[in-house]
Image (cartoon, rainbow, N blue to C red; front, top):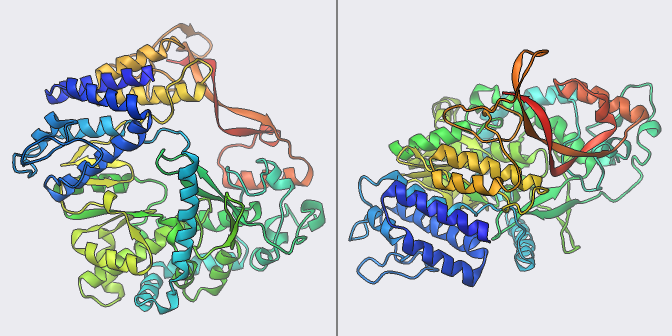
Length: 599
């Protein structure tokens, strides 16, 4: 906690310098609250301060009903005592937002409040229990929704057919000729298989066999029999459910992940990869982005100036996409629809041991979750534009609207006049608009990790992991170095020096460039450490630390080895190495190795 308080002191010093404001009393108040509440003040309470500030910026005035966890200053405008010196420069004596607010003021408060918001630390048992209840509550809510009786269903189907008809037709043609190439994902599976174990212990369900014949998708060639490759194909009548787990997101709420069975994930990857390729290359779908979120980020920054576009965020977005809605999205493309639903898991095993049937299409963890939810939201966004303009669902009208929509998962950007219609349609389909993270009126916008105020990037630097206490905590050291370099580029010099002092206890770090494989300190002057001249390679080098993922023995042999070779050769441009068949990486485990690095 001493290192954490030292970092807070340094950040307050930087904010005070950047805003020409005394932060001494704020430091005293923060230290007092940390002493009483512990780390939760930094990870839960302070982030709520930033959220309330964002809402005031959106409204254009100070709302005294907000900031409930903080003492207020006496007077007509009861602003919080914490950061009162900065808030008085953001809002005038009547509580209205000043016309020309220095972005450093907003950035400074948000940086202090949000620095520890995304700290990778597990929630308490009570909060995880509430997350289980919320997951079941979401499923119960979807059970009350009848897509066949949805008032917007006909327009939704017509709109989807116009937008995605060409993509669906092409994908269904490739599916019918068994041209799709499956692959195993890098993540965990419900059966607890290792990475190479997914090939040798794979199960194949009868439902999957209907559209993904085992001889075409699970055998390296027709010279091998099913028994040679899959020992337990079609042996079980009951399908394995997805395994619902919670991974650290914030200390307030965990992130819900549904770990899919290996055979379902294997087939999902075959559809997902090709589907995203076709969508990103289709003119009608140019507002959907999968490979990069820079479109949304830059659009959000520009919109904070022009205020023509709104940024909307949804709560529990993936968990609220009803399977029936996806069924109608796919329209009359029966083979494609069957394939997508044949590799969809129908049941979920909750952390409390209870198995529930799923009305949602999928949770995060399915390879089809992200592309399918993006398509659903994109269709609804276009439909809201038609509604806002009182236009019929016709190709010529949709052509004029697609340039005004940008979708990256559940991060939506649409013109401000569409917001009312969009919210109505989303809520009628049981989606929830996250009002605390949706902005349309004020000078603030947020999308895909970009926080923008009046055209300025005010995205805070986050501490993703706890401060390391020894040189053996390599993952924490790598995360802290990354945060250090971001603070340096942001101009937080006192914070940068404080982190340098912490890192100096463990390693003598060198200066490197952004493209170096080693971890090191970045500099605007492009300083680089030089230790020797390599006469063989004709370059200057230094001895640096390179983060390397831990590996464990994980062999795959025989026909399974051959299958992996063919799949890896097709799906990856990198050559397949022998070590890929004998080892696998340990997720989220990094070790620092000393290497000679080019300067």
